[in-house]
Figure (cartoon, one colour):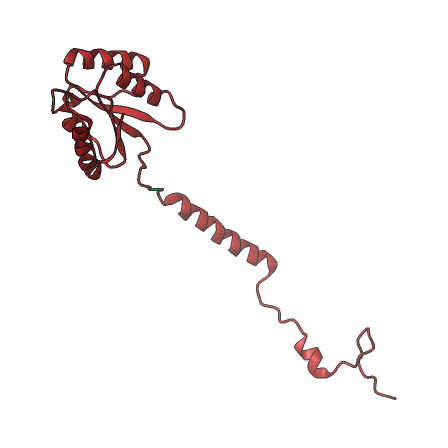
Length: 174
């Protein structure tokens, strides 16, 4: 009886070495055991992720304003800033030479924008050096709105603004 040589579907002769290499080696675990183990690993990962607290540094996006010169021009500028929808704005300090003008401006702004006005008595400054105290309440990136009419020439204001700007952030001269 003739010996048959194993062939593939295409008629190619299959050698014994090829057949041994193509055998699939099965592990002892079944598909069911694999699914049980993998699902327990996934469940453990989810529980661990839920147990870890999500701690992030709070980001402060509020633009803080200091109003220097509480007349109509300054009050209107703060009103415009508080009414924009692009970001939260908060008035945190005021300065003026005339106390009654500052108080009336704060009252009007507080009535119109109660959420945006946070100026306690310790951040309301009166006098010729009040602008310095108001700017000192600000941090980097905050805005000082200089809307006062100076009692001296513009070159004096130009000398004061850059020096304060380098220390505290932006200073807007109006």
